[in-house]
Amino acid sequence: LKNGVLRDPKVSVEVTKPRASPVFYQSPAPDGAYDSANPFLLKGKVESVKIEPAGILLTVAATSRSIDGQAVPDTRTWTVNTGGSTSSPEEITAELTGKTLYMWGYPKAGQNCATACEMYAPDYVIPAPKQAGLMYQTFEVNPIQPFPNGGYAFAAKFDANAPVRIAGVIEKVEIGLPYTRVLVRGAAADGREKLWLADGPRPAALSDEMYRKLLAGASVTIRGYLAKDKTCDPACRVNARDLQIN
Image (cartoon, rainbow, N blue to C red; front, side):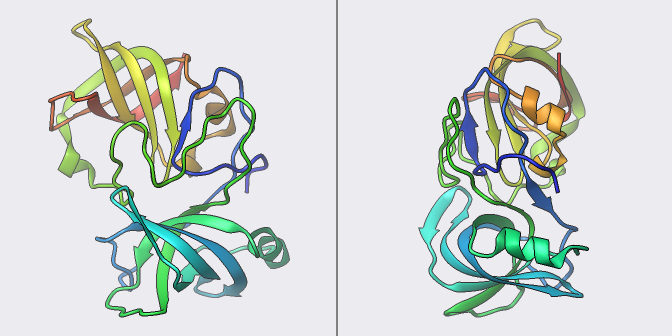
């Protein structure tokens, strides 16, 4: 685990000063018992934690879930398998019990849950109180454009035959599940300035140094691939395979 201040996923950040490092949890991909074609984001309070050979199991009293950016109330009890393992069960139990989490993952395949459900959550984060200098929005709202919480396959959205290098200045940063997104005003090889919306790494993949530097106003170089849809409305989409703060 990384040390630092925890904060909400799907956050709009418009700041110019360094921030504390986040703590994210990330586990392996799910097996065939879960429906990877229908991912979603769940918000709820952890009632209990159980360490099992199959993974860390949470009993969660849900409050809402979000699919394709649309949040709906959900008051069911969820058994959440976060996968992974821990060498400090007492520490992880104390860390999570009673906390509200945002969990991104997959429902159990073929289940019919009226009051109790199961899911696998490879990514989850504990929200934190608002900090001075940060402007928060909840995970139900995306200030840049509608965000597919379940993510996507690269080949479905982006063109592997259209590499691009962009140099510009960050206007907004969104630390979200499952991706980090960066809104950049800059130019590619043609020299014309445009607004670019770059899908970056999963939040858990951000280094402490990158998280502290990933700020509005920072100069950035992005190497990646253009979207198949090149309408650039309201911004040109790009998959950022490499994102460097200059």
